Each structure stands twice: as C-alpha cells, then as structure tokens.
Length: 160
Ligand code: 4NP
Image 1 (cartoon, rainbow, N blue to C red):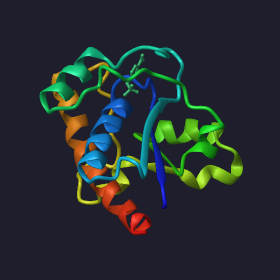
Image 2: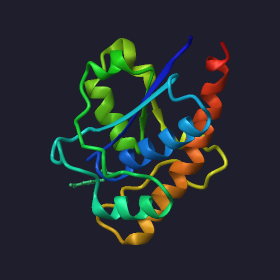
Image 3: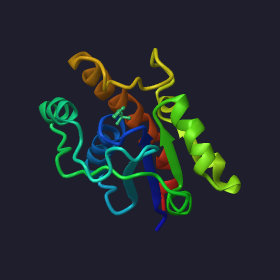
C-alpha cells in the first residue's frame, strides 16, 4: 500500500502551517485516506517551539470546523527531509530557510503550497501574525484551495 507524507512549513509554526496541517488532515480523513497520507507541520524558526497555535488561528479555524488546539509548534530538522516525501512551504523566505536545512539530495522535496492552487491570485501565503483578523481568514481560504489541489495531485500515487 503506497503512502505519502507531507510536512507544511512556515516561520513560527503557530499560524500558517498548523492551519494547513488541520485543513489537509480534514480533507484526507474525509477522503478515507487517513492511513495513507501522513500530515505534519513545522517552523523554520524556534521561537514558539512547544506552543499551541496562535489564538487567532485557533479561533478562525474553529469557526470552519478545524481543531488546531491539539497541535504544538516544532522546528524543522534535517531528518524531516528523510521522513517526509514533500516539504511544503508557505512563502519564499521559508523556501530559502529550508534550502539551508535540507540535505542537497532532498532539496527537490521543497515546494510552495500555492503551486497546488494554480488559479489563485497569490503565489505565497502571507504571514498574518502582525495583521488583523482578515489575514487569518485569507490564510484559511488559501489553505483550503491549495490543500484540495495538493490532495488531487497526490491521488495518482495512491491508486493501489
Ligand atoms: P507563522 O506566523 O510563520 O505563520 O507561524 C508567525 C508566527 C510568529 C512570528 C512570525 C510569524 N513571530 O515573529 O513570532
């Protein structure tokens, strides 16, 4: 049975990447693929390690039925490039930071989340941390569109 693993990555692992993780997990569960698709998230920075997601992310996600409260921030590590098939970044700064952590042979595992929503207006998921509530809604909108595209892109690998 083929399995696929995905780790979403942002800067702090308290806003964007835990949101993507919760959205993706719900899509995977709804598709009956829980045993076949592993979903996780991490930050490139270490400031928030061990913390639950930002209250604003929890609140915005909760209104759409996503439970972020159980998640805890962690920092990405070189071994994640062995453990995961795809390392999915939110923005270009995340990609640059990930390229510094990745073993050279695993750099092609790094992707931008919005590549999976080719019809979307934005090519990156903007950091909502220093802004207002609308930014957190935008993160959710982008994660819903792109995670749906990501799951569709993974499906051909999950046929057996
Ligand atoms: P995230 O947002 O990368 O989406 O988790 C941020 C969280 C914290 C900080 C910046 C961005 N910070 O500067 O502490």
